[in-house]
Amino acid sequence: MPARRTSVPEARRRASALLREWGADQQVRDDVELVVSELFTNAVRHTDSEKVGCELALVGAHIRIEITDQGGPGVSAPHLQPGSVDKECGRGLFLVGALSESWGSRPADSGQGRVVWADLPYSSHAH
Image 1 (tube, one colour):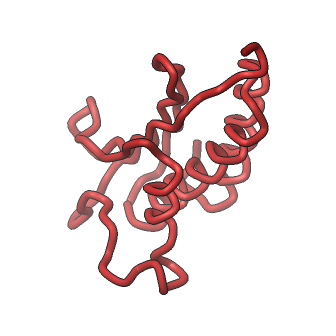
Image 2 (cartoon, helix red, strand yellow):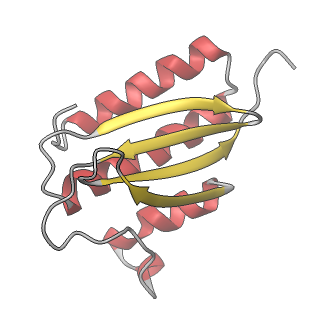
């Protein structure tokens, strides 16, 4: 999707629609939407990307969220800033950490940019 702030609600909407198809609980959908919003926003705000990718996959009892950016000069891996919980712009990764069982980043398969991933617990209506 285009690396613009206006793409964030669309990424959230697509994630929610997919999770509904999978039968995910409302709480799971809410948590995933929030994490997608935060990670997608970070990719738009902190990289020189023209496009940002967003993928969701069921991996065992988890939902894996992967946001792929195209990087840029001087772009470093996302990390929590000391004291960032008190700052308006610093809460995103704190929320990602709080909602995720684990999260991190790795270089993108293309060799350019980065994939920021998060694993959230998954539960469905089927249980």
